[in-house]
Amino acid sequence: MSANLLKETGPREVFCGLTSIVWLHRRMPDAFFLVVGSRTCAHLIQSAAGVMIFAEPRFGTAILSERDLAGLADAHEELDRVCCELLQRRPEIRTLFLVGSCPSEVIKLDLARAAERLNEELQGRVRVVNYSGSGIETTFTQGEDGALAALVPLLPASDERQLLLVGTLADAVEDRLIHLFGRLGISTIRSLPPRQSTELPAVGPGTTVLLTQPFLTETARLLKHRGATVLTAPFPLGAEGSRRWMEAGAAAFHLPKERVAEVLDPLEERARIALRPHREVLEGKRIFLLPESQLELPLARFLQRECGMELVEVGTPYLNRDQMAEELALLPEGTRVMEGQHVEQQLDRVREHKPDLVVCGMGLANPLEAEGIATKWSIELVFSPIHGIDQAGDLAELFSRPLRRRQLIHPGLHPINPDQPVHA
Ligand code: SF4
Image (cartoon, rainbow, N blue to C red; front, side, top):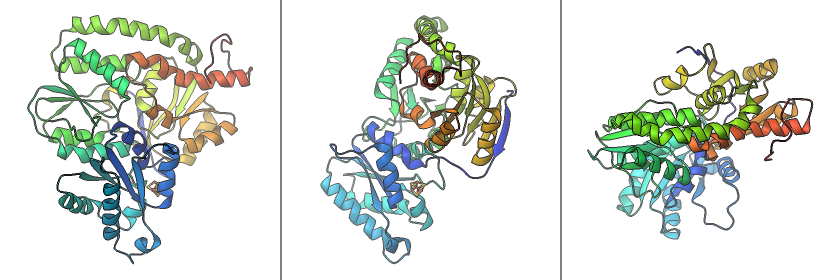
């Protein structure tokens, strides 16, 4: 492994773990996410999830008032009352996630105890679990890790030989991956999180885990503890990463290499064709990835190896060296990989190097655009269906689009073919 691994600490500019409620509540429609927090927390998830006027939302905030924060009211009593009212009003809820926040952390509100007490009262009618989405402890994708880690102790035990895909994917993407694994010869494939919160997959020594997302460190640790084998492989972003990820799964089930090639070769060929117009735009362009989603390493590997981009710096909020070993090994010699954040210093380096494109959080994108630097929101990558060989072209387009748009607005900037379609 030849990347240049560096560390930095200081002021951070990232979303907190509450943000992951936005995709988790869509995944499990029978679950409800109750943030125990302040009005700020409520504003964050309302604006991140959009205004849900026509639907009954599956998330909400139990607002800690000044009296709670000052310790004048019994916050546990209040929380019990809010949960009971919610569950009476919404009998379809099967799992209630109590989600901790900065304010609940600061007043040391014990949500594990609250969940235990509510589980006793509800006697199995609704399952109550808790995790933290606090910005003191988490960046936004770690919220999903916390939610899934909270489910692991509840998974039934089983010795059955199976492949477990861990991490939220768009349903259509997941269906496609399951179909492809089926064609390779793996018949029992389950998912965590499941599509219904009550249909938790079993786990045990026969379980082989493939993580679909790189930010599930704690969940992976707990699954190993339950006897599962967690594979290390490049993550399924881009044609190459997705292929190697599927090959790792196939090898764990001792499937013949010829069958794997028979299924995956034509898909890889199609992906290369889909990538071509985007590679024309991206090749030779310089990209700087600021740390936010933990998807930065796999994205950098894809953009460098399959799209020909030059990596100025690859930031990541945390670096799990074991799980990321294969990704690191695929980066070019000497790539600057920066774990952690000192946002001021990172912005200075962005200005110094003048990259063609910066991947960053929404809060940094507008100021950088105003300075003439093209940006891509990292949160968009978490919401978009980008996993798998079939999605490689769409993934590349997410990066070529801002450069093409910029070229159309400022024709002197980059030599990009004006005949190519623009999807604004
Ligand atoms: S959890 Fe913390 S960082 Fe997140 S919205 Fe609430 S107060 Fe802000």
